[in-house]
Amino acid sequence: MKTYYHIKPTANIEKVLKNGIHAKEGKIFVVIKNEKMILDQIALNQMFLSGSYAVFAIRSSGINGRITNDDVAEYTAPFHRVIHQDMIEPGFIKLMSINQLLSIEERVRLTAMEFGIPEKQIQEMIKDELQLVEFMRKKKTTVYSIKN
Image (cartoon, rainbow, N blue to C red; front, side, top):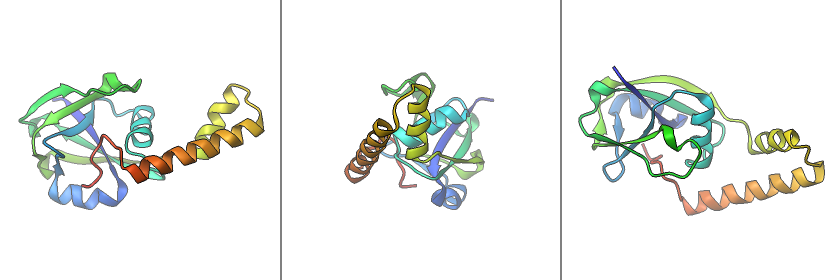
């Protein structure tokens, strides 16, 4: 049986386990791999989460809608899918993990250090990244539904 994975903020764990996963505009966004690197990229770059997030497994037996590829431009795109149905019942959902994200500062610093970028430039990169994340949060320009 195939399993799909769905990300939510940790504040929504009890709600999901009790009420299931509800679609936004008839779509539930999932990935086909439970790999932290892929999930972290989605949590950071599409959902604009920080701190931690929950990963839920969805059994394919709970899916009665069609499943399509998601139209995203990220390098994780091959793993994205869209389930076209209004909700996944709680009986088909299992909490798999709570994953901790690196802070923006840690993520930028680690990446920059790999390329030998000087400290002064790293500080500018961190500032730019923090401003971008704040702008995106204010605009609420997320592909994934985080209301549930």
